[in-house]
Image 1 (cartoon, one colour):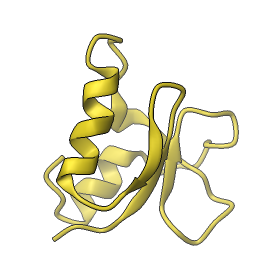
Image 2 (cartoon, helix red, strand yellow):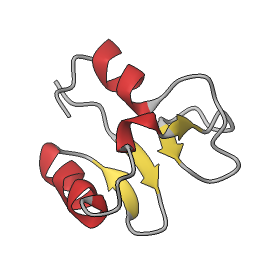
Image 3 (tube, one colour):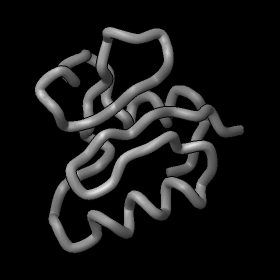
Image 4 (cartoon, helix red, strand yellow):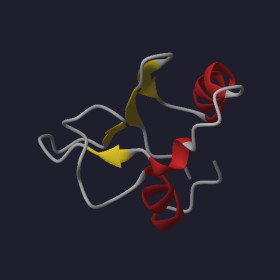
Length: 73
């Protein structure tokens, strides 16, 4: 099962609608040492939106969202 979400980062961003889209994001960050699953949710929208920007300060991380929804990322 896959639930689409928006990812916002300096190196890559966009609507993540599939594992292929997620791999594109992971590839952009592979040499940065950043833990993508620690990206926080932006609570200002109903649609899932995660990132590292200042507005992304929600309680839920991308990793928690993925686990809760059975997404293997």
